[in-house]
Amino acid sequence: MSQAKQWLVLAPTTGQEAHNYRAVRSIITFPELLLHALLIYICEKPCKSDATKAEDILRIHPDRLNESFDPFLKDLNAQDAQGFIECLWTTRHQFDQWVMKRIPDADNNLYCVPITPEHEEDKKSKISRTMPGRDGTPVGYTALTQLQSVRYCTGEHAMQYWLTPFLGRLCKNDIEDVGQVTKLLKTIDNQLSCAQDQKKASFDLLSGTHYSEIQEAEIVITDMMKRQYPRISHYWFQKLEYILWNNAERGPFPTYLEKDKFKAYRITSKNSVEHIFPQNPTFSNDIHKDILDGFGNLALINPSENSTYSNRIIIEKKEMFLEKPKYDSLKLAHMFFTIRNKPYSDLGEKDIIQHKNEMEYFIRQYYGIIA
Picture (spheres, rainbow, N blue to C red):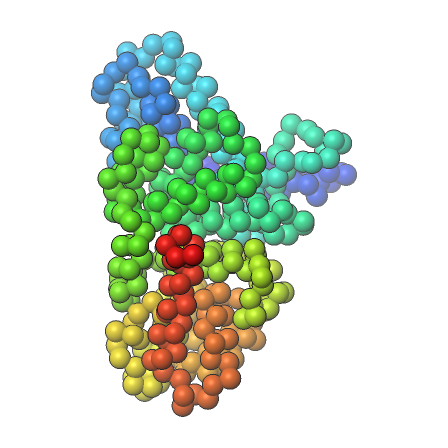
């Protein structure tokens, strides 16, 4: 079975409607979609065989697709066969409707979202797609894609565990508004971010039975803030980027951001942790190692950006950052704004601690721990 992710085909490049089409790529393979659909079907309509268990499927890689389906296919009856096909159709429809797609030829593989045509003359047998935040894309769709980007860029690409409960809930066909869909994803994301085991928590959220793997947000955030490099998950840097973006989008617009640079900002894949005050003791202003390696002094950026900043002092990094046409990181934008008028000799631990406390406040506020 082909595992190609190129599900959507380019339309003709000539003609009146050519500008409405563009090649996009699915974030999962078709075998992976089949596994998501099987999990959803098993949880919604338990099969006749006790051997078919969703918990087991969660631990089987999509490359072993046939093995995953063996318990379900054994002595399969017509009712289950028809039920699964209907479930697969619904799952695929919801996936196409609400899940972001990658644009291979865009900078850093940016993402697009499906937008249903609003005008009567545009209503055809297709779902149009557009870049989030561009071409008049509604803000709600941008938020949905930005939050999905956090999950996609920091999760296990093989299964994308957030997708199973997300699609399972959408398959109930009682959610149609983008605001409701975004709220659903926010709930799932927050719960998974506090889970000790993503696979088990995904099944718990899908089945709605129990949440033994999900801890209190207060405990998780407190623990994360005590950690030091490199023991802080990349997820929390990306999640903070979404929180800062969401706060600015909802308003009031913060003074530390420039509107044009903010408009161009997207959450994309990053895997290099930058020390804002450099690790080299020569330039660290005698900062204690625990603070130097703590969340307040770290930001997630691209490797190329990391090598550009290298071991430069923070003032030089700030100038380089501000000269760029768009933001590397909203966290960095906040930090550099905070120290904008301070001489280098006055910078040090107190600035890192202040920044860390402010970032922690935003995260706790988003999770509803503080008002």
